[in-house]
Image 1 (spheres, rainbow, N blue to C red):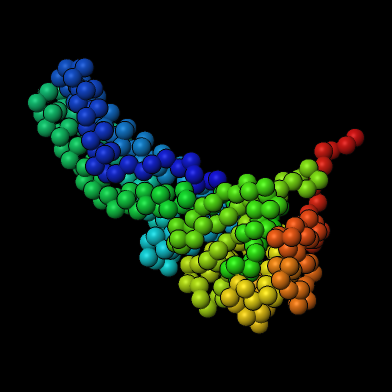
Image 2: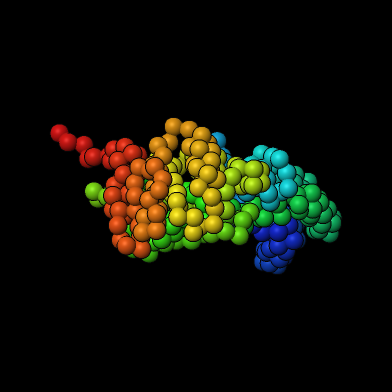
Length: 327
C-alpha cells in the first residue's frame, strides 16, 4: 500500500538537534576557519537533505490511483479539520521544500562569507546556525502536520485497486460477514478507516486461478447516505473506483432488525451511487425466508447457494484476466 512505507516524519527540534550535534563533531575534527566551514556544511546538509527526503517520500497525488487519492483526501480533511485535505498537505510539503532549499542556501552563503580570522569565523558560523534555526522554526507546524498526515494515512485499509473486487453492501446483520467468512475460508484482514471505529473486512478467493478480493465496509455501505457524515460519504465515493461488482444483501426474514422497505431503499441508493457498476441482489437467510425478489438465494446456515452467489458476482463483473502473450 502506497502510504504504508512512508517513514516517520521528524520534528523541527529533532532535526536541529541532529544537525547541530553532528556539526559539533565535524568541527572538533578540524581546526580554525576550516572547523567553522565544516560545521556549516554539515548542519546545512543534514537539515536540507532530511527536509528534502520528507517531501520526496510522498507520492505525487496527481498520479495516485483515484481510490487512494479520494480516500486520502477524505482522511486528511478529517485530520486537518479542513475542506482542503490533500491540497493542504501539498501546501505543507511545499513549505518544507522551501526550507530544504533555504537551509542549503544558508550553508553556502555563510561558508562563502567566512573570513580568515578563526574567531570572527566562529561568530559568523553562529549567525548562520541562528538563521537555520529560524527557518526550522518557521516550518515547525508544517513538519507536525505532515507527520500527522503520515500517521493517519498509513492505516488506510490495504484494498488493491488492481485486483478484481466484490464490494459487499447491505444493512447490518443481514449475513454479509458470514458470507465473506464462508467464501474466503476465514482468511479475513481487518483494518480501520481513521475516521470510523468500524473495521473494514477484506477477504480473498480464487476463481479460475485469478485472485479476487471481497470488501465489506461496516459503517459506510450499511446505512443511508443521510446518516453518513461528509467524510464517510467521500470514502464511499472512493470505493466506487475499486468495485467491479456489488453484492447487495437483503434479509426478508426481518431478523436483522431493519424493515425490508428500508433495505430496498438502501439498495437503490447504492446502485445509484455506484453508477455503472453491476449490482447483484442476494436474498440471505433463505433458511428463514425467501419472500423477496433477488438474483441469488443463499443460506450460510444451511450451506446453500453460497457458491452460486459467488459465481454470479464474478459473472456480473465480467472481469477478463490478462493472459500471457502468445506467438
